[in-house]
Length: 585
Image 1: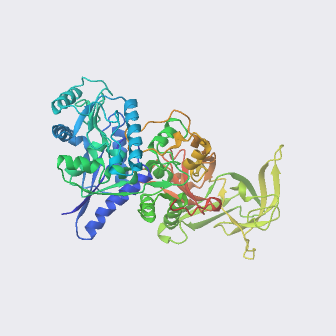
Image 2: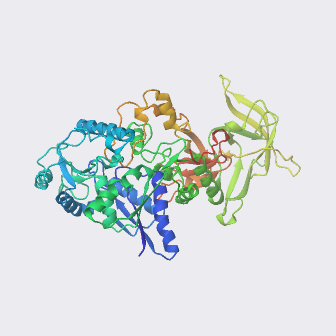
Image 3: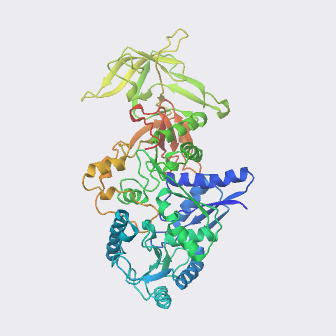
């Protein structure tokens, strides 16, 4: 009597923002059903049928991210909870004549599928029923017509571990004449001599996704099985999902498919993300440049931002490529309202102040100009101070609002103007410091530019990591295919949840598109209040600030009070040169 959806990731890696969209949709549909008075819930199910790729580490990370995004499943289940049921249903399927044990090699199966493709082409070209071609010899497995007794015997030998891996597997006996290639006798069970994270060494045969997915949906009374479009042929009316449920006379959920999420300047494939991690191109699965949920969290994107982004892009069956800038804009809007303001100087330039009798001034600044509830802090300005190197030019122009020889600018919050009176350089001609006069009189001019600053007496050293997009090209996979020319095979879209997907051995073309400026490390200076907030962040809590005139920054996982580390979440303004209006492509 209720709507029941499920979120069924395979625990073979870390979740990415595409999984956040899937969560938002599945949990969201159940929530809408509840709010409409129908009742609704979502089952959190781990599709743990491949013990060679799954780890408790991934399970724990997935559960943590589901909690972080604010989703509460009605229960947490595992496909492995149903291993005994799945095995008994396999025996039943064999008894019904719907499955057989096959010993074909991968090359032999590939050859038979090529025959079936040619057969389908000939069928389409046939002009009448009498001219329909027969199924070609060799298209079907030579083991397809085994008796029920023979298949039961060989399946038992599989269960007992009396065959080597790849020597035998159970196949569904579906329809080789179907135009749906997913219905060409897909595998149901295979041999894997590998202990399972939850069931240990109880089993050496494990069910495949095609066999498990629909049965567990049925056993858990899922009303709506929502998947991305790469599963459409499997869940079609003439696909293995409904074929198997019909054969076993099991309850059949409603299925619906939607487009997977792609994000500009990013890769979403688990296989490709794994290549980046294992190859050392990024620091790990939580590298802030990745679109993994752990990476986005470390970058400083909040759960609210990620959920709002998923809601904003919506759900469609059209191919979806969302702009990275849209995610940044949602984060920018949230942080503008909530982030306390602080001073930080990323590339310090020393300025000695002269003509200032007091030589110090203490004043109070609000932590947020529009929200007094965030409090205030006390700052003291003394000589010398530090400003950004980029805020000084030896040759001024009217479009530059920073400091230049003979030019007057204001210091943010201090009620002081300074004017550059001299420039100090080293033997190589590099600027090492400035001298500036001070004007804090009531009659001082109102300058066009105001600079952020830090007093040398109180400034604290910190590492600041200025992150940008990982790939310079907006569509790295498409560009990589273009670069590959006649050899684009390694760039084909892979199925993240396909257990049989194999990593390529050649270096992919998309590596050439990595953005060399995606992480710039600055040995910066920050105000004392930032150092006091720089302790290693607690779970699900990451202090975030606006570094005035620079952007929004959060405390990194590597940070300590003794050695602060901050990550840039987003710049204050969108990069106009990289602005994209892409929504669908």
